[in-house]
Image 1: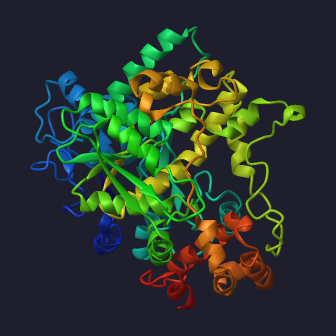
Image 2: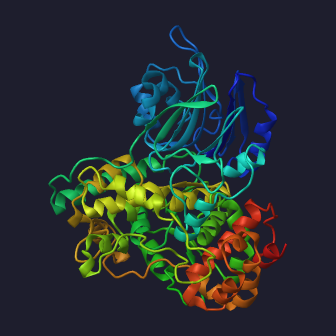
Length: 590
């Protein structure tokens, strides 16, 4: 896990390498273990390294030397290639220079060109320079687990793991694109290739881009979800096959030369991962759980405790208080440069800090389980006809009915509608189409962005075993009845846990994981409302008096209050350039 950045000039001149220094400073938190630079012709690239595999010889850039048929190649990457052991066995004729999991990508590119990513199993963004072909190749994994951004200017092309690196380099100005701002305030995340920063774009999940002379020359895209209709499969066969694919996935996700652990919420997804880790590890698994004592939200720690005890895990709990919330939130918003107003960023950030304190550099987490095995209630509502209470997903926006907006947002649902149109193809069921919509944008631009930024802020790598190509191929094509039955989602996972980990009580109704931001905001509503209303980013879109009234309305408006508070802090740091040190009130007052 690392941070990468680079540029390619349009006129073939040598890049200004001081730009690499500025970008390295902006994303140094992603790679505290070292830095490697590469400059050749019209290309300059840089990596800051978080050493996970091959601690001794795995520094980047990595090279494939020239031979009788090929010129030299250079590579920098962010992520992990989990099938690197198998790839090395398949390409046994290669004289590898390192033990790095990323080195095989050079030789896959030599053999398969732009299709090299089809052979990878992992989470990654990668840049490969092919000087003989005049090409710079960028690729991102199919689920978008790892981020990659770019900008195109008259004098060339620039890319980085985080938008703030492009801004820090002076290559893009910190401004807000109004349509994307409105989308963020409506959905809590943004969709598609365009970001909230004008001129900064995402390399899409599964996309491979070829650059020549500082311009995009070719694009291909690798799908995250398989085509095809569900195979005929009985309960016994489905349970056996799930056990096989999830065990294999967790096994390869544990490949590491440094200590690893996992995040345990006590829910279905993390319980599955812990159950498999218990089976695979001879020593107790280090499991971390967050809780919110003394609040009105349901506390999952007791249940997580029971699950951890049943697995013999080395279980550690952290408590998050209201004081923690006010103190840490500016730093959390600063980490979310590509913004997602998801209140789960709070516990994720603090769990990552605890993981680092405990010496863990790798953490396994349950993201993707809901999307692949149909855990969300919105999927079940999507399946029902309108007369029976069914409705389309995200049919309304977060600030609807609050009266705070100066103008009703236009086009806030366009990105979701585009994903829905594409998801409805391929003969998918209504349930599969709903899952595919979430995989397209919600997953990479909210859940995975949250995991990446909050963990990498502390130099910790997050791995997601559910988002594995073999698990996805099995799960997505499951018949609907194996995912949702009798109004219960993730049915197959629950049936598996009944035997694999009965202490998880998988068919007991869960209340879900909630952060008590509404309670905390309500206690400071009057003071907080005045500060949020005065923020320049909020003033652009909201009536200040209405914002003050909203923050005085109590916890019933908690989601709307939280969204505006997060945006005000995000704007303060990433647009206005304010220091994120200090608590919420100090930062907003600055």
